[in-house]
Image 1 (tube, rainbow, N blue to C red):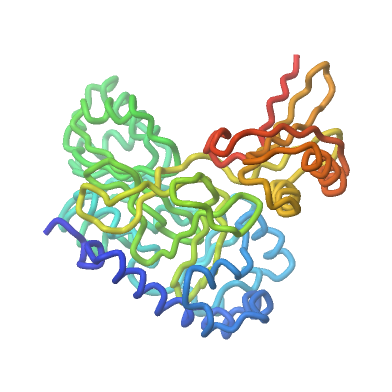
Image 2 (cartoon, rainbow, N blue to C red):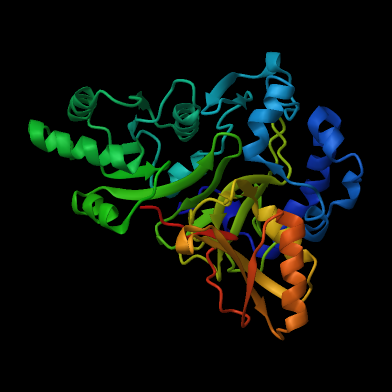
Length: 410
């Protein structure tokens, strides 16, 4: 069997209808069981949220705000729909941000990822993700168990012991960061240990450069990437085509312009926003802070869901200019005042050792009046002076950056 289940090969129309049918139910569930979403979505009727257009009118919940939300209403900021007593585990990510785990198999939906990477029942998995504080180790553990794979819970560190365990137990699969896999392989060479049993791997938490992928391939290890977070679980994963990351079936994904909740056109870089269908942690329009873009067309592997280009940076580009913070949302507010502007990018430099802001705007028909109006808007919104430069539509780089800091310091 090439696919984990039939969901992966549905027509896009069938998948979209399935997601839209579930969406109002999840919104209603979140409003009913989560104090936070009850307040946040008080003015939005759940039964009206039956399209992407309707979804885009709901407010975002930003990952960057979780720490403050949890401090105000411990332990989870009122976002969970299941009581603490009914959870299976609680974790802490850096911040700290506390992450719930509900009961049930493969709660983070990682089994699909492992299957796409070739993991099969009976394969011994060497799991080097941490089992302490953060949930990554258990994300893999529960998924491997669902597939029928035994797991060696290696965790992080203790490189020599890791090498010995691999040499002795002969696992065929590795899960962890790509950099630690390289460390293990290189240490095995130094020790003269045979770790050639490793043939497949799922890596996450770091970028996988082409040079490192080739190094693994040359060692006979086929590596696939996974994009996941502690709160959402799996968002997207790599397949045998190695052509983008296929979005996980239980995820409703949007790409929005940083600083706003407005969806961008297909192919444009923006912030990854996820609505999940987890009954315990019903995150609605959860802004991850990650940048990515949707790839056109279908994956050559046969899976029909949309694909992401991968991780393309961070959406939170807040910077400080002359002692004042400038946020992507402020750039969006400036642009919203002037309908003639398409894409915009605030560039900050320090020519002559003085901070300078230039708002570069794509405009089809520039004018002196528009320039003067934008200058006024910059001043009113940011409380700082800024210059304006006009560009033809399509001239600005499509990399998701709303604020670009080019300042150099001696």
